[in-house]
Image 1: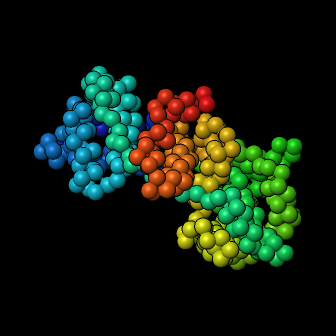
Image 2 (image 1 turned 90 degrees about the vertical axis):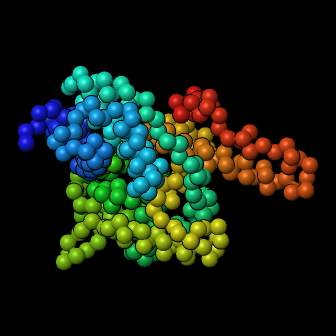
Image 3 (image 1 turned 45 degrees about the vertical axis):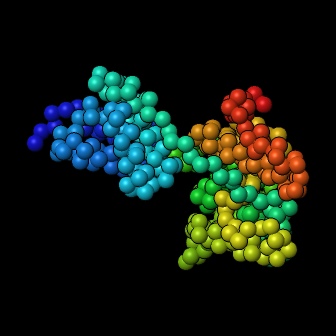
Length: 346
């Protein structure tokens, strides 16, 4: 058949060299981008009624990208988030391709005008501080497993890490001393350091005395583990989810505001909201959480604004003449304010 265009050569370079070696993307990220580009090429093949090897760079233009994104959302029934992620994947590839080929550079200039679809904002779910405390209070710390469970919940809450990051923490990732920190290996092979507060360090020391009494601080042993055949194995994410749900169910008996579903990510949202409500800039929260895009962190500002708006509406009786003057738009973030918050100016 003969590949007489450069598109597939650039694709090979992009996935075999650029993403893993230059961008330092994780295997999971590379696989996700590869799947997205593969689906897009299949779409171009069908739309142009050609064989796959006949798809060319010039077929990747503003019109084809826009129609593909519409297809993803309407025909494949994907979410707006997925639609926007597909666009990000195509943009990333074409940005690289533009450095390798003049036709690609022209197409890249075109598709930069394809914008993200607007996503419906929904207030993020999070726990009040009192609810977090109620859940942490449930494990019986006088028992071995209770001590572990109390520390685990406090640890995932105060560090704001994802459940996959939690189970991947090893002893060598913990650095004690005057400024104790934990090194977190996040999504996309990104590494970040998160400080540990004094109370958390106290619980950590008690935990280590019981569960890692002989271990070196440079050990590869997992911080949280289960025992199989007398060997320490990494605790599974499902184990953590079941553990947290169980204590959430117990705490709900004394705090009815705790939702039916209590999961690890709820604590990540909760610490982010608590930090934001206490004046921590969104830029720092974004670094704390390991967000790849600063805009992702804005959900916490939106949630806080929605909470204030709802409180104001609730405070005004339905039959009050003030209802006619209540404009919800007044309590949303405007563009200037958003920019200032995102970039640490407020």
